Image (cartoon, rainbow, N blue to C red; front, side, top):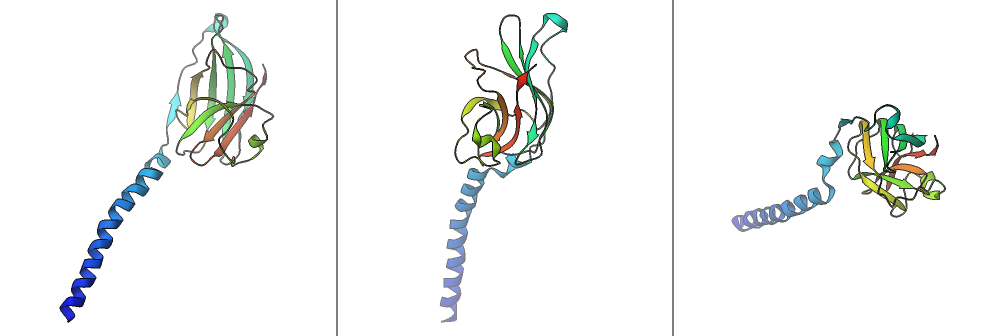
Amino acid sequence: MNTNGKSRVSRKKWVVGVISVPVLVGAWWAFRPEKLFINERVTEAAPFAANSGPQPIYTGKLEGKAHATNGRATIYESTEGKRYLRLSDLTTSNGPDVHVVLARAEDKALQQEIVGGNLDGLELGSLKGNKGDQNYDLPTTADLKYQAVVIYCERFHAIFGVARLEKF
């Protein structure tokens, strides 16, 4: 009778082991914890030279919300009409699925740390690094009614930082 009891315990351990492995793999796949530890410095050169290059038209200082965030956001325009956003001296926390978004400065969601849904704005791309200087092209269709630059974590709907833009 003892061997039967030991066999049931052994069988239960085996079943628990077989079930827990796919559950752990699924949890890892859903959360992707390795992305939480990306800590990268980006140093992109500004794509302009002297007075003949793109000129700044809007600028603002990044202020932290859910995480400490510092730096400057500036929108430049070239003589051909091409615009881009430059983040200078950026310092923010690392995190999963962090993006750079242009949003309306008067949007009430920007006053919060956590947004109740998706942030309404124009996505410029994934954050290239959590430190340094980086550039993001603005689509030619970009409407500059979006007067705020937001560092935004889509996974947790968290606003890392906001820069309200003003005329240069």
